[in-house]
Image 1 (tube, rainbow, N blue to C red):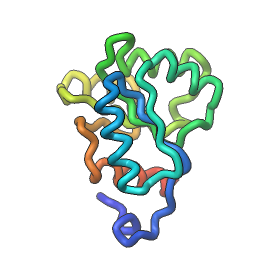
Image 2: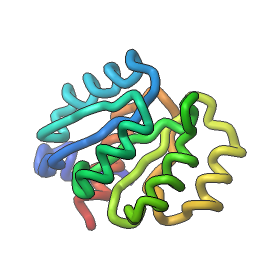
Image 3: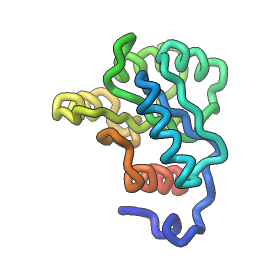
Image 4: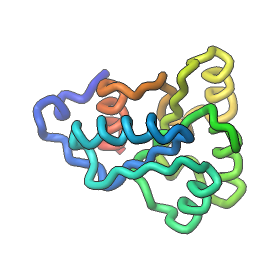
Length: 142
């Protein structure tokens, strides 16, 4: 269910959205979509998951919403989440939406089984306005 306030222009912007995506072109396109939607004060992307881990460890409240790629060569999204928790960063404190090009049932089941309510969404790439609106609405209700 999409938030009616978004469509009426009454929804407040989130402070920061972070995109963790190994493909720079995809990350840039997602960033442009988010900028065009005017949903955040700041939108940043990081293409190296190790660098993203370090960034989040040093800035616990660095982002209101994170779009995390599932399939990355250095470490996949699931390994990223495990390493994030191993560093003492609770997934409950961050709105994380995983995104993937394949949308395989195995990935979705793995996400639900391992992380359950800690993940706020699992969507197919490329990001679409409806998914983004839904994620922003969920943040606004917390």
